[in-house]
Length: 116
Length: 115
Image (cartoon, rainbow over all chains, first blue to last red):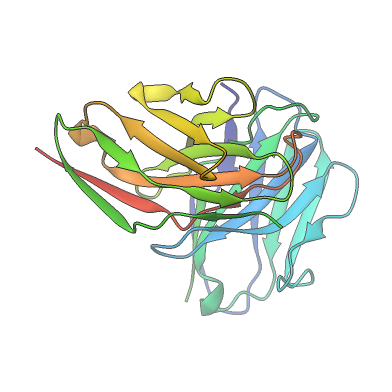
């Protein structure tokens, strides 16, 4: 099946700093990528949907100025958590899909963010 | 708007016994249903999906799920559980055939298989 990678797998940062997380589709072109966050023992909550070359669509309640998403190419999307605070600590997971079709989304392995 | 309910936070089964993880859904149009499994500190792995066709869908690792339109359910099943099946299972739904549409996840069910 298709492979999606995320980098870094784990990051610890100080409060107030910004952190960038990369999501790459390794063997297919991802026209659409999704970003989720998952708190401990909870489900995945969709944060935003990004289409290559256009602005991301954010879910209600997600601050677009805090969670900057860039999908500049068909194989790479980035999520930047700006001015991170301890409450932003979470497990961030991306998924990617190719152009339309009934195929499933393919998920990355996730990034554990800890803000001190 | 679509939604998914997983009524059980945890399911405990003895190894070798059949297992069922329940899922019900709500969508305005045709449902496209998925099951994913998550191991600790890992992303989601795809198990199976229902798009159209036979109501009984077979997936990875011996899992299967039955689509029941009248009961709006998509329960995950396996005839004989393994200890290695212990993990967190998510049911998910999307209301469009397109994989570019967003998927909504259920709250998850932790499956624990005892030896």
